[in-house]
Length: 413
Image (cartoon, rainbow, N blue to C red; front, side, top):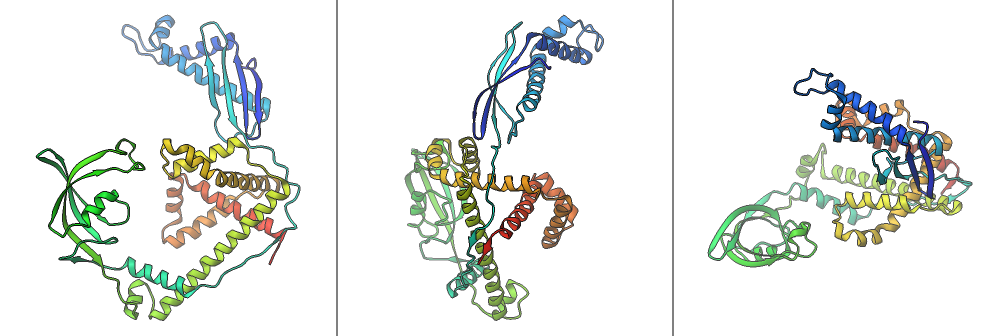
């Protein structure tokens, strides 16, 4: 389809729009190919397979033929656009303003998000400071408390009303006049947001075995949009309350946690882990500061289309409801802009210095990850591939290589 006409109608950093015109003769040829394809496999009453008349096939499979033609025209037009405009798309194009009438050209627009050309004049010569704060006793105590909390058994409480952080077993039923129906059992920890605040307040007013009828209202920010602001007449019965009993910090507790001979050995291991975390956080701060200096030195901007794309990804990740999109976008725009600038810088360095992750490096990383998880490397590889997360591992390796290169060009104190 060499006669397809493509004209650039709009361009800004991160986005390009192209007007596409497919002439009638190209459309007709595509229709004939699609019709022959359907004719060869059509099974229609009164005709042998592949022998049905063309007119009958066109009438019977009109919608399918039209869809196949449109798909072919879009694919061929996209190939032509890529070749003509030398685009670097970061995603499939969006199709807008499609017009297709019999005997007339097919016209539409490609809206394409593209990677902007980024020329980095300065990548090194920066001064950075790496600071690792010492692990405090408060941090150590907090981590030990977390370990105790994870292994604390739940024991029943009698004769007391439940309090936040206690486990309750309740039944909640719907009330309609004198009728009580749809009894549903629930078990959750108070204060963790598993129930709406009004329900938790009612539960905390009960002793085990007691029941209360109440009219409760769903808050305006309730995840299920249909229930926001709605009221329900319910009956709550509290069956059981359980409280965690934190184990004492002893040598026996240390042996329960892991392969530690004593509490002192456990504390030392916890401190070392906290020190490693502090080191990783220090490295992350250095990398962030380096990117900021590169961005400032090269006046890197975040193209609006790429920022909007990043905001959409954040909103989907955090499950932001559509009616809160505008507020979320306003709050998270600086984060999205920083992320876009960071990615543009890293991608530019990768392309310039050819710092892509190799297959050998990927295999080695999979081996390391598999060893930590105590599972065969082939099994982990298959699992990552199925979950479409191999790209994340590759990206991690690539970023490590990029930062190693960039940090070698600057001074880190």
